[in-house]
Image 1: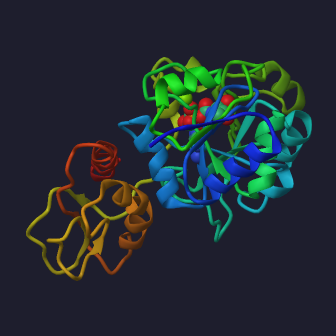
Image 2 (image 1 turned 45 degrees about the horizontal axis):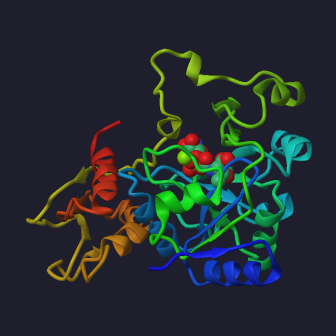
Amino acid sequence: METLRLTDNAQSIKKASALINQEALVAFPTETVYGLGADARSDEAVAKIFEAKSRPQFNPLIVHGQSKEFLSNFVEFTPLANKLAQAFWPGSLTLVLKRKVDCPISLLVSAGLDSIAVRVPDHPLAQNLLRQSQCPIAAPSANRSGEVSPTSAEHVLGSLESRIAAVLDGGSCRVGIESTVVDLSSDKVTLLRPGGVAAEDIEAVIGPLARPSEDPTAPKSPGMLARHYAPNRPVCLNSSNFKEGDGILGFGPKAPKECLNLSPKGDLVEAAANLFAMMRQLDKPKFDRIAVMPIPNHGLGEAINDRLKRAATPQ
Ligand code: TXA
Ligand code: MG
């Protein structure tokens, strides 16, 4: 795939927004770092993000919106969330909030969780793209897994050239570090990741934040701080002999007819797109357990197997 390099003009914004609406990947500047954007409502488009980044895990992603009003179509704003949005948006603060019932955002965006991280970026090009496309855009930092976050279009191309449809070039990012992530989805308001907005400034608005990073037993990587969606039924991996009461999660052309098939044609991007929605469909009282067929461990298969292994480990 040839990666288009788009500069700051009306034509470019139109092109970038058309690509987003066609479920393609577009990297775009925000005030913090460049994001790797896709339509957050499309399972397929979001799966492509993980493929392009070669992420071995499905970390939950931030959904970017043009305004708080726009984002309130998807998540529940609590009184504290309203205060923070009022004080810091547009800007480098991400809020983790409860997903609304019937929220159209892909479950892959939040790795199956009932919460979604949302943010209104403070960058004219990001704002133009969000408004022109009228789309909630899921975007992690636009780098391959393990690399530092990009703060220029050159960094993005150095990492993702030929893996993405386009990059919108907005010069270098003003803030240069990722947004601060605050979890408001439970009673204990928690700082999940320090970032562009100082914790003290947030505390000046809503009072003290809990900080899991001060707990030496807490996981170090911010991505790992997210709770994980866990099915209620036991999960059995690499299954080939199925019994009555099995909710079967199939893969490929040889899967039994009565299963939910992640990808009848054996495509791992399609399988990733279906994973969380199908796990939820099988996590129903009519099944005794969820029996999963073997999934190849290359490409997105690695992230799928990582997720399934966690689901199979009793909490
Ligand atoms: O500045 C930024 O935040 C950049 C720009 C592009 O907006 N984005 C970014 O995304 O840094 P990413 O994917 O690299 O980091 C997202 C962070 C991770 O630490 C992730 O664990 C957390 O947000 N996160 C996302 N959704 C979450 C959720 N539902 N619950 C808890 N944490 C969540
Ligand atoms: Mg990142």
